Image 1 (cartoon, rainbow over the protein chains, first blue to last red):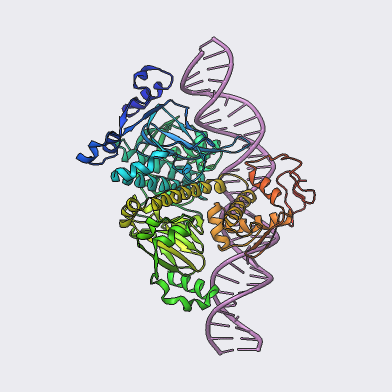
Image 2: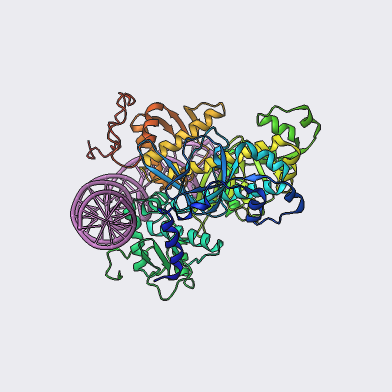
Length: 285
Length: 285
DNA sequence: CGGACTGTTGACAAACTTCAATCCGAGTGG
DNA sequence: CCACTCGGATTGAAGTTTGTCAACAGTCCG
């Protein structure tokens, strides 16, 4: 049906299959691999240092580390997707964000004795493991590594800031639109299609991340689809009107009036602000 | 517009600010000062390194750095309070968080060419300035400094995570309660009273940070006061029932039922989560 | 095939946003 | 010196989105 989705469908099946068993445990990967993989031009001197960096495989649904668990290592996501969560006493799970290729996880535990959050794999994933007790030494020995860490931490900080963007007080549809734009840009940065992708997380996870009820997420998806911005089928999303949805994502709270008539797409019913289509007859699938 | 805001803020609370008018010029401070001030036992070898670390003063309402501005330096807050904000095109200002003594600002700009956020002083403040281009070298030369940076970044990451706690989908009063608890703990960590403090930020800033309308913040303050949890007068807050407000802060979405009968104070009308006090006697019982 | 979970949709009540009026403190200017 | 203005804060009333409850459809998996 959708070519772009085949790959994701495939990886979805990895979940319950021991197919990729060979890729298993921390086979010795090296700092060189990590640096190269992170896009660093590895110099000769770096090559001399044969520092092993373990690789760890995490299956779908498995935790990379648990909230409250000891802070032993930080992780660079090599493949897959994770969600960072914090769980309240009553069991309510707050999703702080989703992380993909190249992102750093677990760094917020450095300033404490334990992890303030959990990281849970949403699909078959793998990470580079850097032990906390080695970080300083490695950075001292290999300046490039230090640079990588700084960059990654900075990115992590920025990503956490995006949390505010989606949870900031705006209509639920706008939150979802913003979230989808973030996702789209993430995909684009990884060389994947920014227009079509497969959501690795459940509606519940999205809801928690956006700060709304999961039913509202469903409704918002339907609304966006009804407005012609996208097509959605379960976790498959195809964006039809990128500019339009971007414009929608930009709207903030109230008195949006009309924004830049030039930006609004003619083909889209959404006239540019805060009009509710909800109960109107114009809502057509 | 910016000038108007800055001017008003400045002349308002700190009319005598002219005193420090020209203080922007960093009086020479040193790395030693920074390390000692951050609580590091400075060793002899560190003392040998006479690395100058400029100090910068920022007046109330003034920006430490602007969103979109060039990433030249990162800052350790030495005194005062800042708010980190991101401004939408239509002028809506999203407050990402508030930072006080010892916290690191501007680090999220490292991975980009410019600052993704602004930092604005909420009162007369001062910061240690560490130029971006010096960071790596300094960390190489002085391991302790590297440690400090890592710790501070980790803290910053954690603090950003707290944003989710206050914005997560819960009742407005709970958001405010959580925010106040965070503030209280911050104050405690700085050796100030956790029960009584002066809010450096406006209701509007709080509202943006909590993700609600500023009127709702006012109402929530009144509600908390009405329930006997605290006394509030403008920006002065005194917490009367710390345990009670903590219990309230813990409640997540809806039906709080009863939480720990032992924890609930007898003097407090709060019988089980959500009841209105103010001028609406008809609501719930 | 059935069970369990995820996702969708409807209805209603609750909570929030918005508009609007008022109060207050501080700074400004007559 | 006092009236005046301006912005912050509080409170009221009305309108609307959203949370909650509930039922159902779709998908996955044993």
